[in-house]
Length: 301
Image (cartoon, rainbow, N blue to C red; front, side):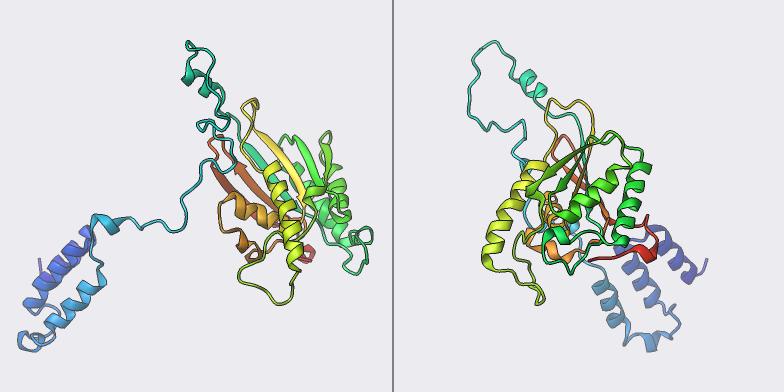
């Protein structure tokens, strides 16, 4: 077998950095890259230097990239059963602590489907005048049909008390027979936290961030958390609210910097799906899914 074929075979089978450099050196020293031996001598080491530079040095320390940012807080919702938050001691010495802790562990998964309201009348002077447009009502119908087609057993449909979210929720509920409707003021639109990087077209006063941020954070703590230990089955809850609220919820739930919320965009009537496991682990299944709408029905107002 020729040196050239041997070189190709070794590289194809092994694929390792050390084998690549060794085989290249052997073939190069014999002039099998196509040059005569005397012509190749001057460029041999420069070529091997390039090969070595292309292969990062391996050490146990850099084999796995070091994590960046903060470590995952397992008790982010203050519901980790392994953490004693009340400081109470056990009254009975015969009580099995491991058994009690196991009984207090959540066993169900919570699925939270965050729906952005549909397109609405931007020229309205008050909240009550900012009702859905004809296209917005059509978008809500499409979202309701999509949620029904998923075939999930929904436990509740919670919605912001603002007119556009209330109307969106009422239209969606027509497709989800028997699902309870719950109104909540905490879910109203607002300015959750000053965005980074800043934007020039939207600059609320500092007091608005101060007031809205506390309210939206309170909504997050009320609705985004792992299941209660008493919950036996997985749940599916729908929350119809606003883009700023949803984006802030996603950042907080995934433990991303919350000031990055404005870097995401959401279509009207879109579905964002968060899953919270009993362990407290959170997964984002979809972000702003609107693929069930025809392209000519998509808006982001």
